[in-house]
Image (cartoon, rainbow over all chains, first blue to last red; front, side, top):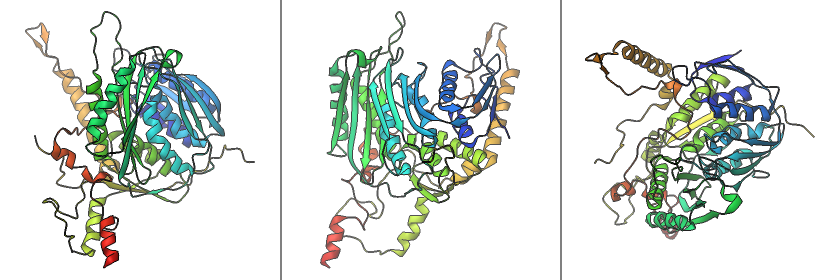
Length: 395
Length: 108
């Protein structure tokens, strides 16, 4: 059974699900209407990475690159090294790997080289903050789970390097994540490569100034890289993560614009504005997030679906288009549907039963029962499909 | 300004995601748009042609994880900041977790 798709959208989601379900896919009309039709370098590069991670996969691309036929092989894992395309950040490649990493034959030790931080893709810092706690929950422990930035690299020349280690599991653990908890502290990292370390300090100063309004426990690390470890292009940025009492992490980031080629008009990012952008993004995320942030949504749904035949629950904010599409694909590949309900209706029912008495605090005018936690939250429930990692070697 | 995004109705997420009307409608609209673009290649005075913003079909979007994030709030305003006040430990707590409330209950 081959599944057919159209266009270049959601490329990684299709590949990940195809590989894990052993379903061949055919994608047609990839950028067929554009001046430069067909697959881009970074997509070919991604397919190369996939070939390194699997055994026996087959990729057929037509001469113009507008159609692709992919037959997945078995996920082998092991020690893999890969030079990522510089058109996209390492986050683009790493994200695909995260979906498949626990289902390898042998524990994965992956070295990726390329652009660690850029404006378009989630940076490695963000993935570290956001995805690792999620994986920890579903894997059961963080034994052997590691994401390390060895060298940083900015666009356009990259030069960064990361190490990602992930253990394999026969099956994942179901996870009930229905209470996000309150945010107890905000952590972050301000990085600077091939620029004055002063820029990182300016980022921190502004970000702290804005965040201290909400919470006293704010700490942002400086990561100023020098020489070899700073990559080949200048850049700086800020990644922020809000940690809650229950161990969820909500993260957001902002990165400087890449240096343009000589002769082009330069676009300059001012550290103060960049810090403000990052903080506002974080506050937006907090407004929208439940137990997981926007980056974690699709990943969490993925682990919920490819789980034992047991119930998993997670509470989130409004879904973004990326994760909504992922839910559709999960249905297409694995015939699994999530139960999605608004939590508002539920809590109202509960409240009706509860006591009507009011505590005598002289708070402001609004309703005492209503906590101000941003957007309405939704609850997703799913029964795992009973996915087993059949390639894992048994001892 | 307005304090943006106060939904009057709850969104039916199940329908939004799994309802197949959704996809079909989208596809129909965009194919119609493409048709109309092809038809109306009208040139002004036989020399200039009206440039339109190119509509990108759902299937032709680039694969970005965190793009198209809508709902940007202006966090400079205190009212907006108040919307997430209770997400933090410094905010108000649910009754069954509020320390002051629990202590009061213990005393009673």
